Length: 371
Image: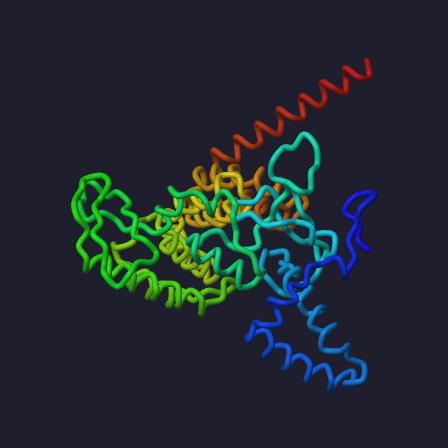
């Protein structure tokens, strides 16, 4: 049993297995057949549990596993953590999951008068997706329909699926329903009341389908910059800058540019996607802070030291709250990147003056205590 406080804990048998859902899932049944065949080779058929028990075990693992991240925040495996399995989902959570080696760490992102596990939430998915896509993803993988506040936010749902008004003096987001009958609806801009051309609506729907398909084929750990450029070209000026699929594509392109060391391009995508990332994650979410860290790094690498340091200073307290002050991202990446800005003589002098001031305060305290 793994305890999550002094009194309470969880055993493997306490985990939900969604037996009925897993049993009728054809894709999972195919996976199980392959897995059973492989296990028989290694441990022998006689050592396998019966079909019913095996399905229950696999179901528990399937719906309770965590993706494990390395020190650079890239996924390298998955595991089941019994105590951590008590946390339910919210698309915008109040807790954040990170890892120290194979040890899971879950930190609360808000102040609470008393610890109440039934009020703590982590996110099972990336919130940068439309409400329909998030719900379908959660139902397909965890077998429940999300009813969190984010999914019930009508204003956010409309922004997620928006086109840019063609009137350049307006440029308001215009909501396009995710689904409708074969007849294309008549839609007006809420700002200038101009009608949206039906061909533009049709083009929007086709572009979203194209975007979702190609992003799904891409690895989040190593996205293809070439494919991202193709998607962005297809999107053109149809999608609003805060359209969720535009934001998601730019985030993929931003990370692809960072991974390939193409810092001018990373900075371009960071500039374009700053507001989108802040909108969908919120200012105090560690994932937004990780974006800020890479964005600030691009600024510093391209010699915009003052702005880069300012962005890193914005990211640092959020990362410390979500990952911990000793996490490798903070200690081994953020701090050394910030020190590169000492190339700027003004920043270097400011830091030396601040360090001298701290030392004088410490000396004063030491003298006062000695007296």
